[in-house]
Length: 193
Image 1 (cartoon, one colour):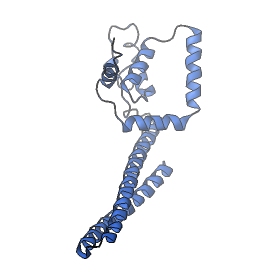
Image 2 (tube, one colour):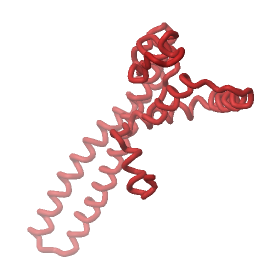
Image 3 (tube, helix red, strand yellow):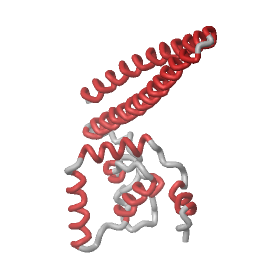
Image 4 (cartoon, one colour):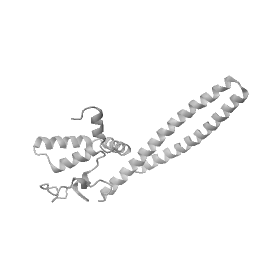
């Protein structure tokens, strides 16, 4: 967590420096355009062209730094949420209350969904499809040994890649899913049955 905060501070300093550099470049660009027109020298228009190219480079760099800063903020939030979860506070994670089914054979009685439920403890999903899949797997547990072993193997493989999982979650949070996005994509691809 301290490492992430340190990186965030470094990115902020870089962003501040880029902002000043952008301002200076814009002022130089304006001055060089004025000078080129005042002197009526076509060779002087080369300077504004270089400064314009430099400005585009600076704007691109600034955009990259903003994205990096946003990802670091989300990274820090995820780490704080996980620290809170280790202390028993799972409020940062969706409880799955939409999946509560009072007629299900066991999920309602065992508090599978809802506040402080098994779903909330396990939930680290970032998409609707992921949340639905987790809910379905809790309501309809695997019945065969092969299915259970395959799921355990998949969990072991993912558990060995915490950086990937964290990056995946940050990306999912960064690019929040829109309502019915999957249906619209399927329709756009003409895969809608």
